[in-house]
Amino acid sequence: MVTPSYADGDGYFQIVYLMERAHDSLTAGLDSLLKQVLDDHSKDLANWLGYVGAWVTCVDHHHHAEETVLFPFFEAHGFHVTTELAQHQKLHQDLSKVQELLDAPSAYEFEKLESLLRETNLEPYMTSDDLKQVIADFVAQGKDGDPFINPVFMHFHTPPEHQGWYDLGYMNFVFYRLILPLMSLRHSGYWKYAPFV
Image (cartoon, rainbow, N blue to C red; front, side, top):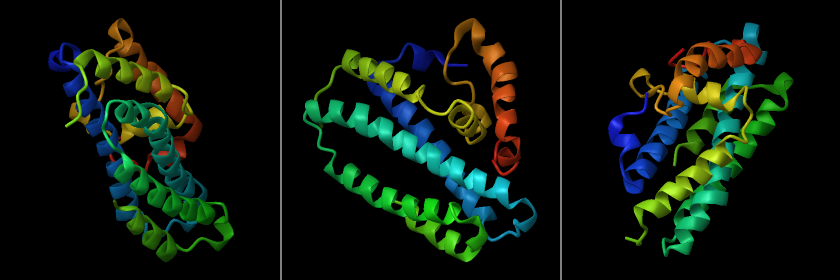
């Protein structure tokens, strides 16, 4: 459930809250991968590689949303994002190498994946209303992701105390207790590796 401080908060608080939740979930995914990468996945390799690929997909999608919605907005308001764009460029090069490894499962080497995963580890004026608008645009862009990967991955990598942060009103129960579990079935083998299942 969305906390009253989020729902009633200004755009500055909301943008920080949203970005912290997204980055915390993606970092939890990387931590989960690094804890399990050296395990023997030979009997469940397809699901393991699917789980790794789900993380890559979510990072790519999140960065795409940042680069198409948030960064142009910030730049238009005098906030320079050249450092962030350079970080994204390096990370995307690293993620491309991970994806190449995933695309050739017969040549999978857990040591190589571990090395690649470890490589990925990397006052302007805006009104509250400006930030609330860009949040709405950012959330709308986020809905373009794969519905069977993105919301499920993000949910299973969000600590329980932050789950249900996005207020769907009377639909909260239906979404979090019925729809999300049904959406997770398509790739159910992936999610056993997630930390908050």
